[in-house]
Image (tube, rainbow, N blue to C red):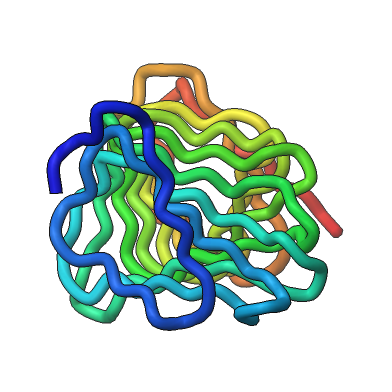
Length: 193
């Protein structure tokens, strides 16, 4: 698959989507939950680098969209890649599995993206006008930035001294373990519920 001559969108509905091979710039893969097809699920079965936009959205209330990275595989959001949790009829989007970010992760106002598994913020940015939350797993920050409503809950947290740009991470609920916090650029805020 090569880059399109103009931006193109691939709509994914239902549960029969599998992403294989690297995605390319110019495409949006819109994983959309809707009543006609039920919940939308897209599976990453093996290591994959995203160079496109992966959009998690919902068209109808009560239907979710999720991206599942199989055990043993890692989804790397490349420096030119975007993962967007879009506002829609239902508020929650899901990412399950191992994710490394070097690009852009964003949540629109009114949307929540809940991730489970191993997450590494290696570069790029997480910008949460809505809410981005790692809910169990590990949250490792080695670079890049995070701003807005970026949370972790029930996670191990590791912040390395290689982070030099101001960032914030909000910690809520029980079960969090701080392994290391070696960067003065990262503000870690503990919140009670």
